[in-house]
Amino acid sequence: MKLIDGKAVSEELKNSLKQDVLEYKKKTGRVPHLAAILVGDNPASKAYVGNKVRACEHVGFRSTLVKLEDTVSQEQLMDEIKKLNEDPDIDGFIVQLPLPKHIIENQVTLAIDPKKDVDGFHPVNFGRMAQGMPAFLPATPYGILLLLKRYNIETAGKHVVVVGRSNIVGTPISILLSRKSRSGDATVTLAHSRTRDLPNIVRQGDIVIAAIGIPGFITEDMIKQGAVVIDVGINRVEDEGSLSGSRLVGDVDFESVKGGCSYITPVPGGVGPMTVIGLLLNTFKSANKEIYS
Ligand code: NDP
Image 1 (tube, rainbow, N blue to C red):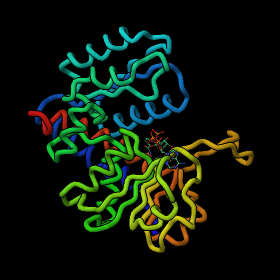
Image 2: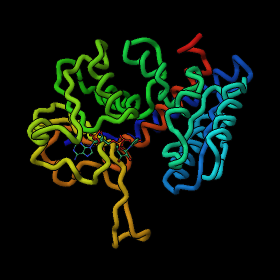
Image 3: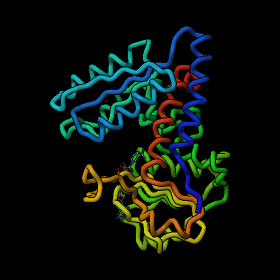
């Protein structure tokens, strides 16, 4: 079994991006600028946004954090989005999820200018992605493609089983891997909570991608010998042995699965850091007007 080291790959890509940003600055006299809207004080969201801000500093981007109370109204949030849409210095921005229950998430997604939608959640980017047109790819699926490429894991002709069909992970990665392209050409099965005989289906996967949100859901008996296992899940579980009383685990039961597979991503340190680099690369593409000219 080979460990897919997302942390190391993301560091390599960040260092290379840092050089590209220096060139960009020399050429244009400005630096790429990413903004994030953070609503409320959910500790996980704060940690994710903190990682993104630190990553911006690392590669030489400017970053702006817009913090809003969790009592913010839909209108106030829409105003903030409008400001970022109209600010010519902002290349891209994200609205960190989840949002408080009273906020209509779809309206938020639709309000973001697709040209600045570096999370790739807007239906315009999603549709362009599905049709193989230039688009901001959703950051986590983009990160998974980069990992597969870095480890020379062939997808053409392979059977990929994706478990989980969210709009931000499962569905887009299933589309990307089934597209007629060098990073796709796989035969993809998209499984979910209504799938019958899930273990039998997962066992057919040459590549298994777990994006479920249930700790240790994928177990040894579901994985074919030699399969590639990509664990997207990030779940906090109690751990009396750790100082904080908890630790992060994936959707895959890592200890039982690792023996029989060919490659596996750890949690933490697998897909998570790749999501951040996906976001940075999208922002750099936006600054260079690579997707929308
Ligand atoms: P969602 O909760 O939006 O979707 C979960 C999916 O899992 C749904 O499609 C659901 O099916 C499916 N599911 C739930 N229970 C079962 C079951 N018993 N059998 C089969 N399928 C099931 O999750 P996300 O995609 O947003 O996130 C998934 C995980 O990935 C979470 O742990 C999240 O924290 C993590 N994550 C990690 C990121 C990273 O950067 N590494 C980025 C984003 C998410 P149905 O549609 O039928 O309800």
